[in-house]
Length: 475
Image 1 (cartoon, rainbow, N blue to C red):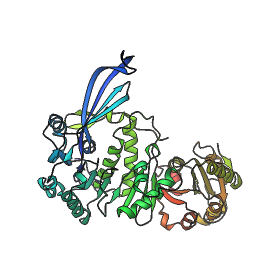
Image 2 (tube, one colour):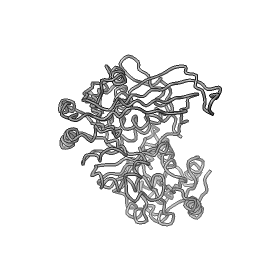
Image 3 (tube, rainbow, N blue to C red):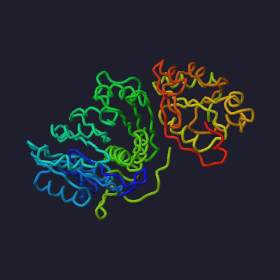
Image 4 (cartoon, rainbow, N blue to C red):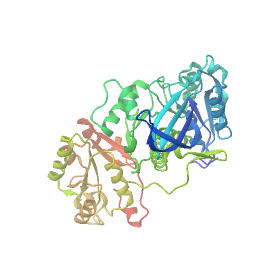
């Protein structure tokens, strides 16, 4: 069991949901069937693993976090096979199931799926919740993940009553919803729909596209679901978070060569739950989970998951890598207009950038990943001196501008001489104004202005530099 952030061992994560059996049949194709224009798959092997809530559970357990799984299991051949795959990896609290264990089989050639076949209903039988000792399963939980696959476990009235009791005790509850599933229980810590699910769940849809649309949808869903936070995932673009108290944050994903995204959502939701169980905030948990899910996809996704002893893991690999500008306010405005006319998202960030360091560049790369252009507003030398004293800045304006303009993620730079950037922001009107996570958007004087035209102020994870210069030169 790995230690939590406070140095104590992490408490268990309880995963509640519909467990399935996933099967990948791998082979090769070099001819068509003689009686139909269909490829002939020469089968070379078969790999089975837990699916649905079962996959979410074993992926969390593979991190070294203790996991309890509450699910419905049927005593048929696929159900016995699924139980054996779970045995020893997670502690299973199973109730009765009916309609046959759900088996999802992907027929694959060259690492690509040709066809998927599904069979079985996998619905919890009558009295499912009463047959499971839910209080024992939830006792001492560090976090709960509801991994809903629309088969009925999350809709069971006894399960929902137990979850409501967990919410009342302030146990973090992460709800990964499904279009065919029930509404999350009120008070859930964070609900994690993907963008398509959020569009379907929010009547009237969102505004714009990408991160702005996701933030608008999250706002609608906060009220509908009575959640404390909603995190909308956007695939390779990462995730955005909107909190009930009004704050927003964004967690861009590192750029990876996508192979098989199967299981990425389970990895993300499980990562959020595991981080919350270890003492992380919601924003920290989402940022960690986004990066973890990107690495999961880069290493081959669900198809690469294998059992080693009592743990389900992917092969070990190297860390996932993260992913010239015009100058002047008028030039920046032209960039913004061009992107806006094309239906894109305009992102802006700002600061002094005195002694440009890796904390700055990480923030700027994260900001650029949220939209289609990045406009950087830079404090003038006089503005820096008013903030830091007569000896500032360490690096004169011309050099700071040149360093920023040389970054691939920056599309335009502009200077402002005031104590805050409201003047150029009003001229550019970006969709997103991005600050590092060491800033609280609620404390920024520009936040009301940005929101006045429908923009959002979001924080991205702050990564401080270890360089001596950075200790005195903060963005």
